[in-house]
Length: 221
Image (tube, rainbow, N blue to C red; front, side, top):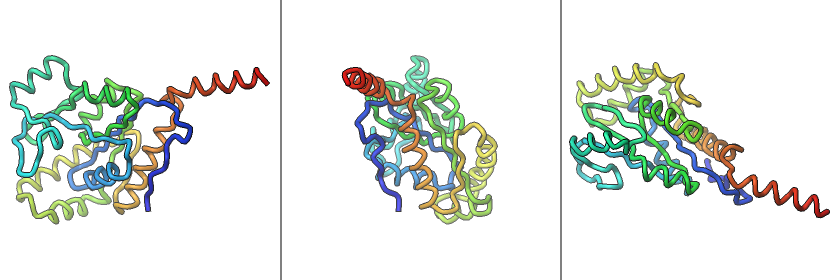
């Protein structure tokens, strides 16, 4: 069973990780994201802005920031997004200010975005971004999962399958590529990646002070 490993036993200050999960619809990304958020107290979900109408049960500011098309265009013109894209006829974007504030504070941020968004985010944030792509075990299994939801029409399912082929073609734009043939095993792999990325020397901004303290102690001895 996966468990939360303390990523920094010495309390070094560090920059946060912009942790991207991408996959075709039905590959299990949302399930893994929910498990990761529940297991990792230092991880927060990035809340996207969207022109999509609000759905029953959704909460403004929690699920999405719901804006009209003119408002979205204004935000785009003012460079208020880290990334944005058209997805299924609507626009989705990641507001820049809250993400940059969390990153500076050492907060890890989880992104549920497609390959276009992941590419844009990497171009802007570079080394702070970790990109993970989740593959289905087969296209037959992917279609089975989509049909098993019993929520989409035949037209929607066919559209998602067609889109999946295009998304999978961009697998080589990611740092890690996993196959989700077992949800628990895939989640543990994703969690391991996050833990390892937190410990990278380039993110340990408090490490310099610790090293200087060690050197002073050595000189005193």
